[in-house]
Length: 148
Image 1 (tube, one colour):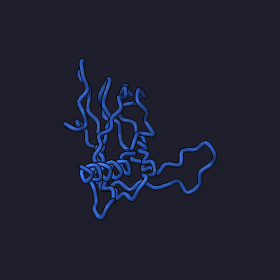
Image 2: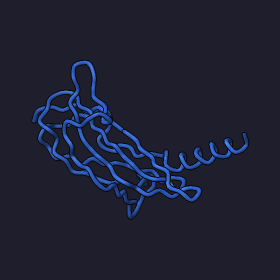
Image 3: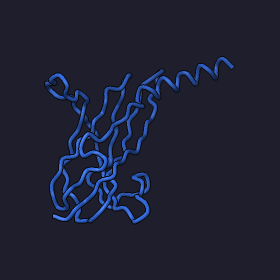
Image 4: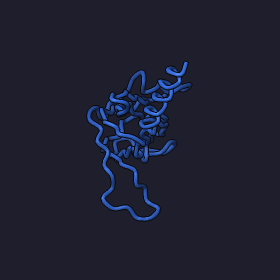
């Protein structure tokens, strides 16, 4: 019984080191975007509490139907980026500014109209107890796309 408690505690500790996942800094949930325009998507990555090896990120968008929006875990109607995720800390931070590591992605907003899901799938590995443990997350926000 003590062994299984120790193993559970280890997994909880390793999980907490990477569980501080990435998030959208911009745009934000509910923002309105103009179809055909260039936007910079900023993804923040708070400092993990332990060693982490970033693996990859997939960034995309899907249109919503009248009753629901698809999850990024199932599909992207538009794939903006798929590849390495390498968030960097700002060189200088003033009081009150965001000090999280981040990575920007410049994309063209698709020519769709109405609500859409902007999402990403992120994977990394947390280091602990002589091994690397995988961490996966799916993050999405709803944005409104309007014609130019």
